[in-house]
Image (tube, rainbow, N blue to C red):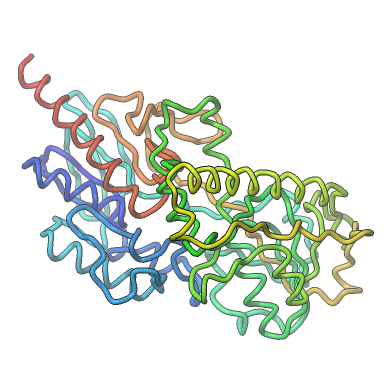
Length: 414
């Protein structure tokens, strides 16, 4: 049994950022990790994945990027090495191979039960991430048993798939990247497209993330948004890291030979059924993208940047088949696998506290939960739009560490 001020659950970038902020404030704490540092990045990603954010943007508290390729994109081994180095250099008190089994409230705070003992603490920081479980829709159960199914957490490389056609469901960042890679392996790919966010990888000679930062979009606060729940459910940007700033959108995939269809709405009698709303989905994504580009152009004019950036331009509208496919026969089309790129959800099955809603989502206000001394990091738009980015973890951790310290001071003064 161990008594300590604060327990951080998870030694990914969020948990390590919080550890650094607490160390700066002399708060005694421990970081519990079920596997090794950066465990999710290490074990739950496909081989070719790179970060979607440029290296200059992938910073943590006290650790700016100082490598030779600020505009490059880290591979998973590079990111894992950097997080391990960050933990070591900062002296983070990480206890690896320690799985949290349960968290209960008690008179003095919380009881954290693990595979390596029990911790009693006043504060708990949930930094286990938002991507613990891959979401697959209910219709997944209707896919013929002869068809193998994967998620972005179980898919590793094209060679692991049957040498047949592939249906990728979901056209956000994971879906478009996997669709491109699998098609390049020689397997015919059909991509089912629902709501998505289309953006160019670069615009007017600068990475789109550079523009979003310059416009202040990434620093938009959670308490300044009209419909926060809707914003938190927004799909990830249709981006890929690596290459020469290549835009990866539906037009690029169509050019490569990927077949684009509408949102998957059902599976019946061995056939997948798709919505007829593909054109509307794509038109909405194009409209939102052009609004962002309009804002960038206006900023260029206001700040007299015309002579230091590239010319104004627009991407061609998303091309949609005039008669899109509405049904796909798994057997007739020789589909051997389905990859469900339909999002993720966190896993709080071990959290025995009344702090989740009926869908299992944490109830919180900027990362401060309904239970005293309980905090969350790593979820969409915790405190700022950039909360899901590595660079956003530092700001969130600073604010939550300040709240934690102030609360502790009030408790001591009482």
